[in-house]
Image: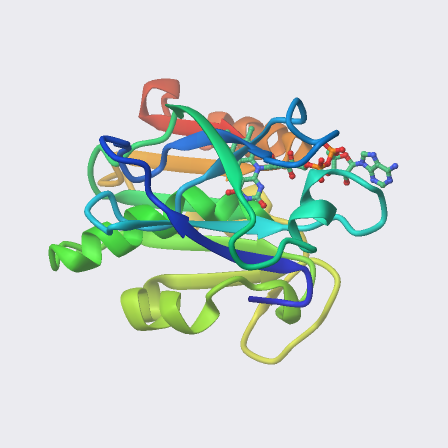
Length: 210
Ligand SMILES: Cc1cc2nc3c(=O)[nH]c(=O)nc-3n(C[C@H](O)[C@H](O)[C@H](O)COP(=O)(O)OP(=O)(O)OC[C@H]3O[C@@H](n4cnc5c(N)ncnc54)[C@H](O)[C@@H]3O)c2cc1C
């Protein structure tokens, strides 16, 4: 999907159920890899007859994502129980960093399928333009409510830098009911602090670290 993001489409076990935003632990069904379980979020819709994952790979070390990038057709994954802290509660602002966008992929696809994208807004933080997962699809679903910010690259039409309180403020009008946040731990810590300073109540925040 990008220079380091894989899309994996696989068979859906019978009776396997999840809601948009949920994840499972995945292991590769190969000797030496069976006990190496890693959490990944479903990016397909619950009523699709297949499962899809969107996976950022770390080829610099021999972990599971590197091994997943070498998988061939018909090789198997072992899936475990479904879990996850993020689910759609109602309209709001979604803030994602890198692969932290994965729970929001399924949620936005779900809302689009019901024609209920409404005034939901996605703020997507990445290092460079090349790192943006599903840019075209988010653009189609959200139009002007798809906002990008790039930390390591200056590109015309894209905000530059890290997310700050000043950057968030215009997106957090009083009428905003929910703020959904998903990203790596340092980003989560910073955003939660900023939201607190901007008087967003903790009860309004739906979050998960990736
Ligand atoms: C609930 C949940 C849902 C998630 N959903 C998704 C998803 O849908 N898509 C997705 O892409 N990710 C998702 N993640 C993150 C994903 O689980 C991790 O990226 C994955 O487990 C990494 O596995 P790994 O074996 O390749 O790396 P690990 O070996 O587990 O390493 C994890 C991290 O440490 C760093 N690291 C460790 N050792 C080294 C080394 N020697 N050299 C360089 N770097 C190193 C890597 O940068 C990596 O970020 C999710 C996480 C959670 C908690």
